[in-house]
Length: 336
Image (cartoon, rainbow, N blue to C red):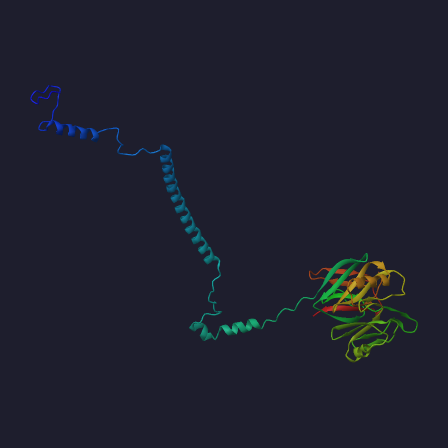
């Protein structure tokens, strides 16, 4: 570059109107302003950090969709639960009257109270009498237990109709046998509906029935004997087996099918052995069965016993079809 301002070459560009010092200062400022070595306009960013930021933003947008979906599902579930509770909860409804309260019915004199009163006049059904039948084994002795329900005990004499549906349990009661002078007689004291049939005291055990209530005992003399006469009760004697929960020893050594009228916790039941046993062994088994008091009923393979359970099934044993002397007697339970 030449100092002569008027002598400018073709390949030069000069800014006119400035002296040399101003020109140098201006050129220096331009150099500083456009020096590419200075800090760029945008700072450099780490690529890995940039990817993390992008992924985080995408995850936030994805989570926002999940949260929205959960909120919508929750609202639907709550609505379904509320609807189900409303549909399945019983709602109180106004009772429908038995008759419509319009002029036509009122003119005929039909009112709801008259219909209700007629329904109340229907007689209630009586509880069904039946026998509970159970099997058990005590001291290696198989036993069958008969428990009468909704029935009243009584003594009957003679060859009764054993198919009478009102009798839900029956068994031969007092022993009987031939007498040279009197013919067939009942063994032991016997009273039937207040009528004295026999005064014999051959056995100590007794059963007294007054007003449908049974009393068992072991005594040669008891005031219940006279009470049964005066109050039209029933009375018979047999061998005692258990007294106050204590089994009693019996001198009878023969084996037979044993049957007993028993008291257990205020309840009266019939218990029999399914095998032939001695009375002493049978008494011990009854005591183990928590029997409080017990006397024998007529015991033999011929002795009749029948029962009807709640389903109407019959349980029979003994000579059911055989004709017996007129003194044959039974303790039976009739439906109330």
